[in-house]
Length: 418
Image (cartoon, rainbow, N blue to C red; front, side, top):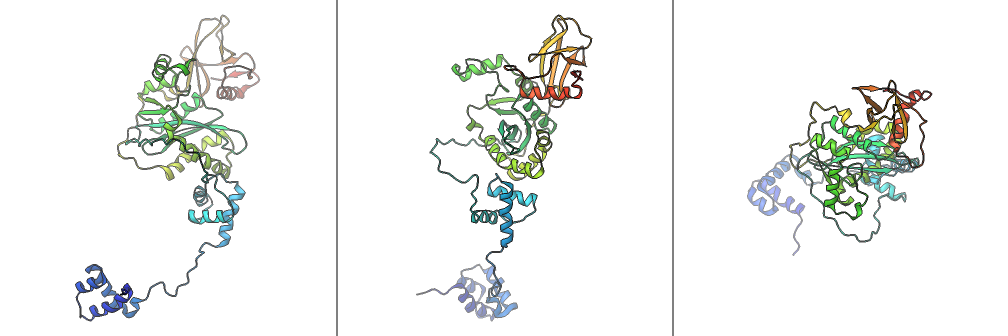
């Protein structure tokens, strides 16, 4: 026996209840509904009459393709013209923010697929790899921050620049990002300086075994993990000295997969930042660093999550610490008999110093450039030879760039104004 549908049951029993021939409880039994909902249906029937049984959508024109074809064509053309490197979902979000084209990601994806365009992250058959069990997030913001750097063609001009960034483990928030010509101590120190100004220095950093963070012995490959750590404690890097002053612990990852959160962050940024820079005309490191705060805000808007616990565990640096001096690369040198000191195979001389044996403190940072400290004051130094790269010199690309910028104000006399 075929059971009547719900509409037929409503047409049969609701008029009976409206006429008082059955109770709400009986109506609920026949319609398999609650008594309260049956009361609402009867009330509507008394107001609307038999039109109550007619579906409200009946007679309305339904356009299956609500998004007009010209808008779909515009989306496809934008993707092609920009040479977009972002995924379809990210592109849908970008055109909403930048071009104010308000349509769903589903519409964008279908339009691009119909045009025969493949996503740069389309799934490919991969060989089976050993799975890494994900490590659960820390419960508190500021408990752990993952730090890493990546070289990439962010400006889409064939030249790779390096970005260093920090992501909070508990909230997935991007706390800071800095661009430079190469990964170096100064790049990370500038990143940490940004974090200190934002009051987001963590209890612990999670890093790799880069020489920017830890001293590495020549026979490092033959040493156990415990021996490497003991060697690093005996030969402390400037990074480790800074962390000691601030009371920050460091955890060293044994593999890239161990710090997967920051690695996945770079995958997302490498897909999105080139297009963000291109749309805004950003093509230099200086402009990219000026846009760094906007990058953090964009990331935190779309990718950050709520931590498991509300309490924050960011630390506050002691008030008596000079942050600009703390987050600078320091080196102590001694003058020769003629008052000249050497730094990375380049000779410098301080005005008024012509004897040897004097201790000179050098300070190098992105914010203050190359500075010379002697007798409790910043001094003026002269570069004795021309600033040029030589084969085998120990001057890093970052240090060379900073020296060149500092000297640029007075290249004819080769003076460092400090």
